[in-house]
Length: 302
Image 1: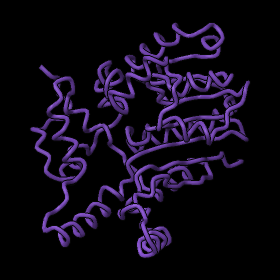
Image 2 (image 1 turned 45 degrees about the vertical axis):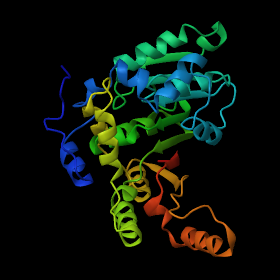
Image 3 (image 1 turned 180 degrees about the vertical axis):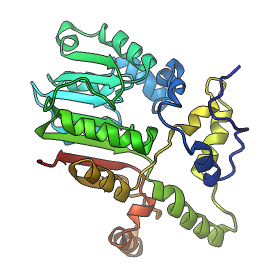
Image 4 (image 1 turned 180 degrees about the horizontal axis):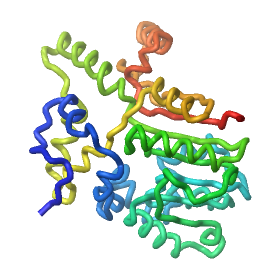
């Protein structure tokens, strides 16, 4: 019998239903959802999980490639990965000769990460530490880390939890350190973007678009290994603007952007489509349709 955390019949017909069901939840209240099945099979995709275990976490993925390019980690850097999960960023940072620490509040995640750590060479293993702890109260001294990663975590914690985590990261970062964030999806694409796409589809085809969260729910229901409650783990999706404001409140200056423009048009072919694409980028519509939010944040000097 699947254990239930969300007290509902899970009859999701709209994004509004989803928002109603996650209201009031926190990372703490959903803690038990982050179990071994989640980290072994459903982080990213089943294929991505297979690659992780085969390569011992050293193969770059679409989730690690861009953050690593931004970070430009050097030998000897001291790196912290908050919400490290299975430990991909930790292993790949250590492979670049950095000293990397990964923390996660999920015992299942840390167990997997430590098991993979034991399979590495002494050289890599000696530069890695995994800790099971709460990111709201980091047991590290002030000004410890050169780089901190907060990848695909923001959307999984409540607003009050996010503030506490960001303030702790600011404390443990060196004055010239950097925080690198990835969060998805952009909440504006879920709301305004979806409505505009649905209207456009109705005028073109006479049919309305199925909301991505509804489609995802139907897909997950057919997976016998997946507890549908895990659909509700995104409790704090952000926009570019809200992410910028959150960081400002917690003592960071930041550059926030959408890596995926979310262009609703086909790949440009010919002058007309090229012109449409240019107008789309200049109009600011990418902030409504784009999905992947990236951040580089620097501590503001006190």
